[in-house]
Image 1 (cartoon, rainbow over the protein chains, first blue to last red):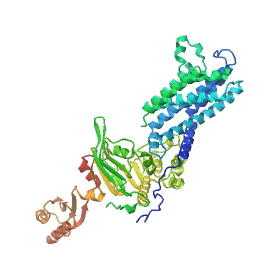
Image 2 (image 1 turned 90 degrees about the vertical axis):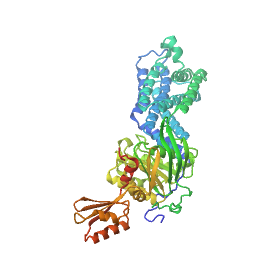
Image 3 (image 1 turned 60 degrees about the vertical axis):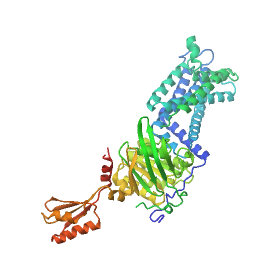
Image 4 (image 1 turned 45 degrees about the vertical axis):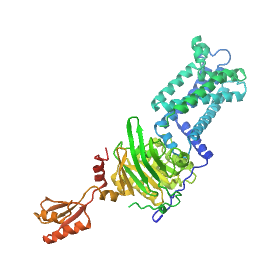
Length: 259
Length: 320
């Protein structure tokens, strides 16, 4: 009496897809979710581009000697990394947790580390698109970058790791609404106080002592040292980013709550 | 009758039950959510888990799905430990959460296709979308689907990977009657095709219609388990009503009936017999009528519903 009235459509044939296929599909889905979200695009594309264009063409802030775009472009690239890896990822993941998306995925064949890999891929793909766009805009504004592209890539990857850890820590411990508010607030504070468009030298010396250790300060300073001055490896900035990455990812791994 | 012999489940490799829970205990702080629960789900059967709010249904199901570790007891799902063997178990089960679980910005068809991609031999997506009535909203983002459409999408995601065992948490809550029927048909077809189904529900008729086996949970324990027929037969008393001439001598009927029966004239000419209503008792009643020269009219055996059984066992209404 196996399939007297049934069609056999649902006859069990379980199995997980090959891992690379699962991760690729998940990364593609996560990327589409990021790029489809209007508020995210405002944060990751519109704001960095506007800041770059505005402050390069209108001298609102004294960016020191040289072309403003040479000062601003590295900072805005750092901002782009922060907007995607930290703010965007924190908000998106916070709401995925709130709406049970992470819970549902936890019983899918995709392992957790596969999901995190896919999320990281989605962040990196978004960053590549952001950096391509901002680079074109900056070049059009007369930017003349220097330095070794590999050093730049290393800084961007370490910055991504540091901000991802902090973003996931926030998303995995706070309520979604709190994450939304806090992630935007932190974005704004770091935008102003992290050497992105306002040189750290403009701050009082005591404040500088603290602000220079922020991940965004290390990232924008590191990028600027290389891209504006053609310096080699900015060890101090790399070191600060590495410490943030280890602390952030470690804390996220320990405290992240999936439900 | 639970109609499952192992041969009922084609292509299901193991012979062990789909779910085997013994002595399960789960505490949250001082509160004991599950308190020594035993539950067995036969392969290829549909088991409905009924219980008032806070009875421990969802906790039990979520432990079976590997979300939580039990504080005590043994849990085997398809012969596997849901936590230790999670990686092996996950591809073999399908899960529909009570709500949510889907990206707010994902389109219905996109999400179902994605879920299919995570499995080795998924169902064809399009026919599944059609039969669940999601064809017209395939490009609609999840957040803009109606509650019923969201439910059906979650159901589709639970079955698209061709699992051996499906957990459905309140699968028809908030559905209109037509969509509800479509869901019921799908559950029946899952069963026919050899898929084991565990569903929690607030709807008695759903349990009566779909389940081979019903487990009633209260206070973190299974207070009774059996087929809907078995549950309605045992425990609660049934009754027999008939009409006839008013003023018959009920006492003489009572003498003819088994000791634990009751009989009364409810209103003039309407009689009720309570007790274990079986063919023998019916014969006793009709022969008593014959002796009294009465033609009994409108004989009706009133069976207790699952709702009565539930109320009797838990003292609670199912829908809070």
